[in-house]
Image 1 (cartoon, helix red, strand yellow):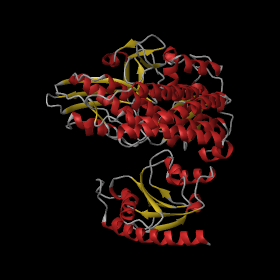
Image 2 (image 1 turned 60 degrees about the vertical axis):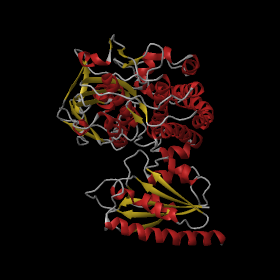
Image 3 (image 1 turned 90 degrees about the horizontal axis):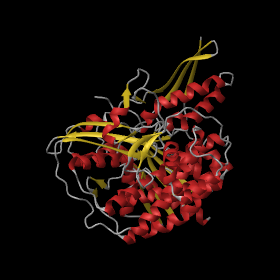
Image 4 (image 1 turned 90 degrees about the vertical axis):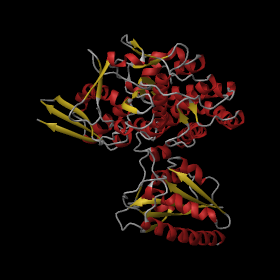
Length: 422
Length: 155
């Protein structure tokens, strides 16, 4: 059984250079295994959403959602339309807060010559204030539906432990109306950055839904022709272990690395963003779709805008469900689901017995799936950096890594770059 | 108004700040507002809004004896080598620094840091005897600072 490793840990980039050429490149993740998949074994399915919410402090909703969808598919739980809408609202909240955090606190300083959010605030105070307002709106949505914004507890198999009234949602509606303007300004702000012009041969992968921009549901599609259900994930993708990383690497079978996250979603679902967001996207003068990983930050802001508008639509149409959560009867079998975490597709598999006790769990997070793609990106980038100073090369490598918003992004602010010259 | 902000998570001794806030909220000093903030990250900045002064209480690791009470000026926090216990993108020290940069930190304030050590019990409400004793001293110190900060405001 593979160990779940992955989040909020330290990373290092190890390079070996011989005769001016990169002969070895390893993005090392040495965060110790966290064994969540083992922790889930022997626990009842009803406990799983609260356990998986602990995996990540930034994107707990995604872990909860992939868990409940996989188990509901297995137990064949009917989900009422208002509950489905609330889950989409919940996910909007997470995208807004996670993306706003990454854009302002982690990525934007890279493009504006700032060391941190604090120095960015000295230079671009209104933009930082705007980012904090956006993040606050996202947190407010998660708190309303999840009980708290960090490791929320509101989601359960069948729905939520409590469904809000229409009046509960009214203050959010007002905040979201203001946030729309902030989000449009945010898109324009990042589109004005001096983004490097690099285009890679990338296979983008994301969910695609028949009618919606994908969050909780859809088929897995890729820019090179994959179109499969979550149940077929292992027919097209494979994970493998490498000695230098405690996170499993992943690749498309028979091909190679693939790229998950906001840029993949925008590229593969531009027609699902709706006319208003699409118009803002076109006004950036960035071509969509595109294969420049540095435009990820712009894609991220487009998703903030989309999530704000979608949250408003959901709240406007909301009628509380009759019961907050549908009852369910456990059954033996295997349930699988993929939802779109802020950083990309998050695949969960659970095997239970007829009492609902989990016998096996498998969690495939986006950061580990993106790891091989990050290395491929760096392998192409690094030769041009070898004549730069260590400080400058480190900064440029960090910037490239942060395009993927890895869950080790906190640690990659302290990326240790080792260059071994032979 | 002086806002007292207890920070932490519900688990083990990391709850020291939350427990101090709970005890202070049971009998709050006059003209204060007591808030318990579960890992607030950047939302700490909003908790400063409307406060003339603030007292932050949090668990810290500063390589001193467990139970040690660190009493630091809010505006000096960024220069101290004390790491607030946080695994999130914006820790307490960084959030305070950002608030100061944005002009959103109150002019006066203290940070009361309770030195904690790893404990065997991480369950909610499972505070070690050392941390419990430190929380009691911190609550007394917080009350003293309310008086002092109010007197300074009157000067």
